[in-house]
Structures are given as structure tokens and as C-alpha cells.
Image (cartoon, rainbow, N blue to C red):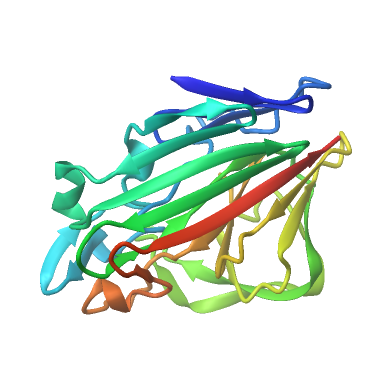
Length: 285
């Protein structure tokens, strides 16, 4: 089922399954900003990545000496969420642990996501509460896909010198080598082959925002990155969309860690504490 909120500028639809954005449409022009998930190319639209981002070595991790299996990007994107209601310009969903999730992720938690419209801005807030008596280790990331064309441009607020981590295309693990993406520049042009070696995985970004400039229509999407330590940028090569992905977490490297608490970019919450992550996007026509 899809639930909607709207104001004078935008109408936004969010699926109960996966709490995934299905549509962000202009009320003025009818333009659809969101990729519509063509399964022949990529069926996703805006999966929420939790409790890991990317892939683990052999899809496994160790916690307190016990081994668990976890699929790529975690399980939140492949579960039904509880619809908590809508009011005015706001809609809210929650995912909580179940007997099945505790078999692969032995923590009790609430993950509450709220979508809020404010003029031409969609704000997406994630609140993670640790309901376990122990320290909870996790990653979380966003993965929204926006319609675009080859030749459109992603522009950081500031000039950046950024390298992408290289990925093993079979195992989806980070390799030791890095490749220069931009050198004291702020523009990344979306080309036919920019994603031939998988996502750009960027870190050390100074800018708080990145703007997707849709050249043909003149539309813009200004995206606040939520102070995330990593930014993934990805699409299937040549596809008419791009994913802007702020991540509090990252794929495993090829170096195996003894415990998930040692995983690169892992986050931790103490019992009854809360972790907040917010991104927003401003849509200009």
C-alpha cells in the first residue's frame, strides 16, 4: 500500500513495504522526480539500508564470538513497516525487531522514519532506538533514485578533491586502491560509463549539499547529505536515474574483522539511547 502527503507544491507517496518513497511529483507541472523502478533495469526506488550498508564478507559478521548472516544492505528494505499515521504535511512509519530479525541481528530496536513536506522540500528523518540491554552496533543509509539523463551534472557546494573506493565487482567488497573522481572541482558529470565499476564511494566531503542539475528541463534537486561520513553515487550504467546515497556505514573491505564492533564506519548506541539521521531534498522548477 502507498500512503500520500501533499502541499501546494508536491505530492509524495511512500510504500508501507520497505518504507520506500514511490513518488515525488510536482503539483505545478506533473513532473515525476523519482525513478519509477523499472524491473528490467533496477526495480528499486529509495530503499532504506539498515542495519548494514553494502555487503559483508561472505554475507557474515561476528558478534561476541557468534557468527550471523546478513544480506546486502540489511533487511529493512525487504520488510513491511507499521504505518503510524499521517497529519497535515507529515507521514510516519516504524520498523521494530521481530523473532526473525533477531535470528540474524540479535538486538531489540525501533527504527522510526518520518517524511515531512515544507514548501518545496521533503525532509526524511530516521530515529533509531536501542531497546536492548547491550550496546547496539549498526549502519544506516539512504538510497533514493532520481530521474535524470546522461550529461546531467551533480554539483557540490564547494570545490572538492575526492577519490572513490574501488569495488570487487564479484564480491562487492572495497579494495585497497582508490581512483580520483574530481580534483579541486565541484561538478561530477553523469556519463554512460561513470558507473561501469559500480558506485562511487566518497568520503571526506566538505560540502553539506549536492545538487542534481537536470540540464534539459532546468529543474534542480538540492540534496542535504545529513553529515554522513560516506556518500554513494550510483546507477546501472547508462540508466536514466541516479542514486544519491548518504551512508552512516560502508561495504566491508577485504580485511576481515573479528567483531562487528570493529567494522569500518560502524555506529553504536547504548541501551535506551537514540541515533538520529536526517536528509532532505529541495525540488526547484
